[in-house]
Image 1 (cartoon, rainbow, N blue to C red):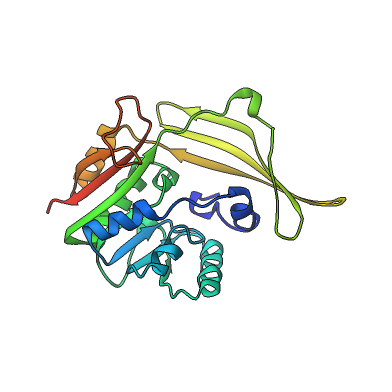
Image 2 (image 1 turned 60 degrees about the vertical axis):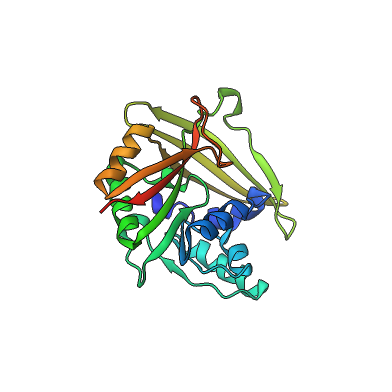
Length: 249
C-alpha cells in the first residue's frame, strides 16, 4: 500500500484510543508566535495540536494525506466550537491557495515519506508555500528497532464503546543502507466473540543530519538551527532532533 494511505479505515478509527494522550500544543504555539503567522501544520491528523492552536486564536491551517483522519479532526473542532481550515493533500504534492510565514510538523511525521526523492519533493513544496521571510520546523527521528521479545506482544486499550482494541508489531525489516524500517502492524478490535483484524505495513525512512541538510539546500532552504524537542542544543548522540529551516532564495 502507499504510505500516504496508512492512516485510513480501522487504523484511523483506533488511532486516538490507542494513542492515549495528546502532545502539548505549547511548543508549536511558541513557534508560531515567535516566527509569525499565518501558519500551516503538515500531517495534522485528527487534530493534535491544530484544534488547540485554533482555540488559542492562532491563524493555523492544516493538511493531511488521510481523509479519514481529517474527518475526525473536523468533528473534534466542531464539538469544541473551533473553526478550522484543512486540506486533503500529500506533503510532496502540496498546492494550497496561500503562503505561510511558518510551516511545521508536530512530531516526526516527515519520516513517513518513503525515500529521499519524495522528501526532496516535500521540501520543495514547503519552500513554495513559505513567504520570503518564512521558517519551517521539521522534527526528525531515527526509529529504534522493535526488541525481539516485543514482537507479537500487543498494546491494548478500551474504545469509548467498551470494545477491546490492540495493536502489535508482528514482523519487522530494517535496511541501514536505504535507511528504512518496515514494521507489519496488526490491529485488532474485539467485542465478545467477534473480532476485526487488520495487518498493515508501516514504513519509516530516516535521515542523517547531513543528508537532510543537503536535501533542504536543494529545495532552497537552509538549516538555521538543530535542537532537541525542548528547544535546547541537541546532544551529540540525540536521535530525535528539531530542524529549523529558513528560505535562502
